[in-house]
Length: 217
Image 1 (cartoon, helix red, strand yellow):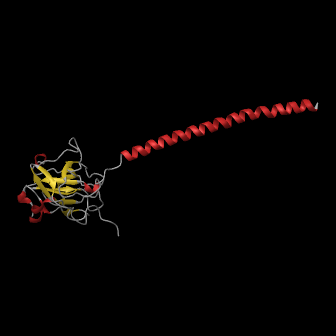
Image 2: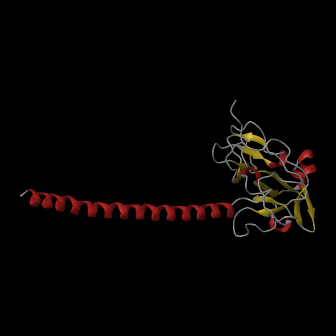
Image 3: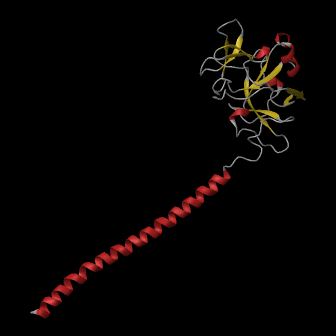
Protein backbone atom coordinates (compact mmCIF):
# COMPACT_ATOMS: atom_id res chain seq x y z
CA UNK A 1 0.00 0.00 0.00
CA UNK A 2 2.74 2.29 0.97
CA UNK A 3 4.66 1.45 -2.24
CA UNK A 4 1.57 2.11 -4.34
CA UNK A 5 0.97 5.31 -2.48
CA UNK A 6 4.57 6.32 -2.94
CA UNK A 7 4.47 5.48 -6.64
CA UNK A 8 1.26 7.43 -7.09
CA UNK A 9 2.58 10.35 -5.14
CA UNK A 10 5.85 10.26 -7.07
CA UNK A 11 4.00 10.08 -10.36
CA UNK A 12 1.67 12.92 -9.51
CA UNK A 13 4.55 15.15 -8.32
CA UNK A 14 6.88 14.36 -11.24
CA UNK A 15 4.46 15.09 -14.10
CA UNK A 16 3.48 18.64 -13.06
CA UNK A 17 7.14 19.60 -12.83
CA UNK A 18 7.75 18.74 -16.50
CA UNK A 19 5.29 21.34 -17.87
CA UNK A 20 6.64 23.85 -15.37
CA UNK A 21 10.19 23.21 -16.52
CA UNK A 22 9.09 23.49 -20.15
CA UNK A 23 7.32 26.75 -19.39
CA UNK A 24 10.41 28.13 -17.68
CA UNK A 25 12.59 27.12 -20.60
CA UNK A 26 10.16 28.66 -23.07
CA UNK A 27 10.07 31.86 -21.03
CA UNK A 28 13.87 31.96 -21.01
CA UNK A 29 13.97 31.52 -24.79
CA UNK A 30 11.45 34.31 -25.23
CA UNK A 31 13.40 36.62 -22.92
CA UNK A 32 16.62 36.00 -24.83
CA UNK A 33 14.85 36.53 -28.16
CA UNK A 34 13.17 39.76 -27.03
CA UNK A 35 16.47 41.03 -25.66
CA UNK A 36 18.21 40.30 -28.95
CA UNK A 37 15.48 42.04 -30.93
CA UNK A 38 15.58 45.06 -28.61
CA UNK A 39 19.36 45.27 -28.93
CA UNK A 40 19.14 45.12 -32.72
CA UNK A 41 16.42 47.77 -32.77
CA UNK A 42 18.44 49.97 -30.45
CA UNK A 43 21.50 49.68 -32.64
CA UNK A 44 19.36 50.59 -35.63
CA UNK A 45 17.98 53.64 -33.82
CA UNK A 46 21.47 54.73 -32.83
CA UNK A 47 22.67 54.44 -36.40
CA UNK A 48 19.63 56.35 -37.61
CA UNK A 49 20.19 59.06 -35.00
CA UNK A 50 23.82 59.40 -36.03
CA UNK A 51 22.81 59.64 -39.68
CA UNK A 52 20.32 62.40 -38.83
CA UNK A 53 22.75 64.53 -36.82
CA UNK A 54 23.10 68.09 -38.09
CA UNK A 55 26.42 68.75 -39.84
CA UNK A 56 28.99 71.04 -38.19
CA UNK A 57 28.19 74.71 -38.70
CA UNK A 58 24.49 74.21 -39.35
CA UNK A 59 23.52 75.92 -36.08
CA UNK A 60 25.97 78.82 -36.38
CA UNK A 61 24.69 82.33 -37.04
CA UNK A 62 25.00 83.70 -40.60
CA UNK A 63 28.62 84.33 -41.56
CA UNK A 64 30.02 86.92 -43.94
CA UNK A 65 30.10 85.37 -47.39
CA UNK A 66 27.19 82.99 -46.81
CA UNK A 67 24.73 82.79 -49.67
CA UNK A 68 20.97 82.76 -49.15
CA UNK A 69 18.68 79.87 -50.08
CA UNK A 70 14.91 79.46 -49.89
CA UNK A 71 13.77 77.95 -46.58
CA UNK A 72 10.34 76.84 -47.81
CA UNK A 73 8.14 76.29 -50.84
CA UNK A 74 8.86 74.70 -54.22
CA UNK A 75 12.32 76.28 -54.35
CA UNK A 76 13.40 75.18 -50.87
CA UNK A 77 17.18 74.88 -50.73
CA UNK A 78 17.76 76.75 -53.99
CA UNK A 79 19.84 79.89 -54.29
CA UNK A 80 17.96 83.20 -54.01
CA UNK A 81 18.76 85.74 -56.69
CA UNK A 82 17.66 89.34 -57.06
CA UNK A 83 15.25 88.21 -59.78
CA UNK A 84 13.39 86.07 -57.23
CA UNK A 85 12.34 89.14 -55.25
CA UNK A 86 9.33 91.07 -56.57
CA UNK A 87 9.52 94.84 -56.13
CA UNK A 88 7.41 95.92 -53.16
CA UNK A 89 7.25 92.46 -51.63
CA UNK A 90 6.17 90.08 -50.36
CA UNK A 91 9.32 88.89 -48.58
CA UNK A 92 10.80 85.45 -49.04
CA UNK A 93 12.02 83.26 -46.19
CA UNK A 94 15.65 82.19 -46.37
CA UNK A 95 18.43 80.26 -44.68
CA UNK A 96 22.10 81.22 -44.85
CA UNK A 97 24.31 78.63 -46.53
CA UNK A 98 28.06 78.21 -46.35
CA UNK A 99 29.18 78.22 -50.01
CA UNK A 100 32.42 76.38 -49.17
CA UNK A 101 30.90 73.41 -47.33
CA UNK A 102 27.34 73.62 -48.74
CA UNK A 103 26.06 73.43 -45.15
CA UNK A 104 22.69 75.15 -44.76
CA UNK A 105 22.50 76.82 -41.34
CA UNK A 106 19.01 75.51 -40.65
CA UNK A 107 19.66 73.69 -37.37
CA UNK A 108 18.61 76.81 -35.46
CA UNK A 109 15.27 78.46 -36.17
CA UNK A 110 16.90 81.74 -35.11
CA UNK A 111 18.79 81.69 -38.42
CA UNK A 112 15.72 82.09 -40.61
CA UNK A 113 15.72 85.37 -42.51
CA UNK A 114 13.17 87.62 -44.24
CA UNK A 115 14.43 89.05 -47.52
CA UNK A 116 12.48 91.76 -49.36
CA UNK A 117 12.97 94.22 -52.21
CA UNK A 118 11.60 97.73 -51.68
CA UNK A 119 11.97 101.10 -53.39
CA UNK A 120 15.36 102.43 -52.21
CA UNK A 121 13.80 105.89 -51.97
CA UNK A 122 11.50 104.61 -49.21
CA UNK A 123 14.33 103.38 -47.00
CA UNK A 124 15.75 105.52 -44.22
CA UNK A 125 19.49 106.25 -44.31
CA UNK A 126 20.64 103.46 -41.97
CA UNK A 127 18.48 100.88 -43.70
CA UNK A 128 19.74 101.96 -47.12
CA UNK A 129 23.33 101.45 -45.97
CA UNK A 130 22.60 97.78 -45.28
CA UNK A 131 20.57 97.24 -48.44
CA UNK A 132 21.65 96.43 -51.97
CA UNK A 133 19.45 97.68 -54.82
CA UNK A 134 16.62 98.08 -52.32
CA UNK A 135 16.98 94.49 -51.08
CA UNK A 136 17.10 94.19 -47.29
CA UNK A 137 17.11 91.32 -44.82
CA UNK A 138 15.96 90.83 -41.25
CA UNK A 139 15.58 88.05 -38.70
CA UNK A 140 12.31 86.19 -39.21
CA UNK A 141 11.86 85.70 -35.46
CA UNK A 142 9.61 88.09 -33.55
CA UNK A 143 11.31 90.06 -30.78
CA UNK A 144 8.32 89.60 -28.48
CA UNK A 145 7.82 85.88 -27.82
CA UNK A 146 9.99 84.33 -30.51
CA UNK A 147 7.21 83.37 -32.91
CA UNK A 148 7.92 83.35 -36.65
CA UNK A 149 7.09 86.54 -38.52
CA UNK A 150 4.99 85.28 -41.40
CA UNK A 151 2.71 88.03 -42.71
CA UNK A 152 3.13 90.95 -45.09
CA UNK A 153 0.01 93.05 -44.59
CA UNK A 154 -1.26 96.60 -44.39
CA UNK A 155 -0.43 98.05 -40.98
CA UNK A 156 -3.11 98.56 -38.36
CA UNK A 157 -1.74 102.06 -37.80
CA UNK A 158 -0.89 103.25 -41.30
CA UNK A 159 -1.37 102.74 -45.01
CA UNK A 160 1.84 100.85 -45.73
CA UNK A 161 2.45 97.13 -45.70
CA UNK A 162 4.57 95.79 -42.86
CA UNK A 163 5.96 92.55 -41.46
CA UNK A 164 3.51 91.09 -38.97
CA UNK A 165 3.78 88.36 -36.34
CA UNK A 166 0.41 86.67 -36.12
CA UNK A 167 0.98 85.36 -32.58
CA UNK A 168 0.46 88.70 -30.79
CA UNK A 169 0.11 91.14 -33.72
CA UNK A 170 3.48 92.87 -33.47
CA UNK A 171 4.24 94.86 -36.63
CA UNK A 172 7.59 95.98 -38.04
CA UNK A 173 8.38 98.54 -40.73
CA UNK A 174 11.25 97.20 -42.86
CA UNK A 175 11.80 100.64 -44.43
CA UNK A 176 12.88 102.03 -41.07
CA UNK A 177 15.14 99.27 -39.78
CA UNK A 178 12.18 97.01 -38.90
CA UNK A 179 11.23 99.25 -36.01
CA UNK A 180 8.09 98.28 -34.10
CA UNK A 181 5.03 100.22 -35.25
CA UNK A 182 2.34 98.21 -33.48
CA UNK A 183 1.99 95.49 -30.86
CA UNK A 184 3.89 94.29 -27.79
CA UNK A 185 7.33 93.62 -29.29
CA UNK A 186 9.95 95.44 -27.17
CA UNK A 187 12.47 96.05 -29.96
CA UNK A 188 13.01 95.94 -33.71
CA UNK A 189 13.97 92.86 -35.69
CA UNK A 190 17.68 92.17 -36.04
CA UNK A 191 18.98 93.32 -39.43
CA UNK A 192 21.35 91.40 -41.70
CA UNK A 193 23.59 93.35 -44.12
CA UNK A 194 23.60 92.06 -47.69
CA UNK A 195 25.84 92.07 -50.75
CA UNK A 196 25.03 91.28 -54.37
CA UNK A 197 27.35 89.65 -56.91
CA UNK A 198 26.36 88.30 -60.32
CA UNK A 199 22.71 88.47 -59.30
CA UNK A 200 23.17 86.29 -56.19
CA UNK A 201 22.66 87.55 -52.66
CA UNK A 202 25.18 86.99 -49.90
CA UNK A 203 25.65 87.98 -46.27
CA UNK A 204 27.85 91.07 -45.82
CA UNK A 205 28.13 90.97 -42.02
CA UNK A 206 26.72 89.70 -38.75
CA UNK A 207 23.22 90.33 -37.46
CA UNK A 208 22.79 93.87 -36.17
CA UNK A 209 20.74 93.68 -32.99
CA UNK A 210 19.52 90.84 -30.84
CA UNK A 211 17.89 87.83 -32.50
CA UNK A 212 14.90 86.11 -30.92
CA UNK A 213 12.22 86.85 -28.37
CA UNK A 214 12.50 88.75 -25.11
CA UNK A 215 13.83 86.64 -22.27
CA UNK A 216 12.05 86.71 -18.87
CA UNK A 217 14.00 88.34 -16.06
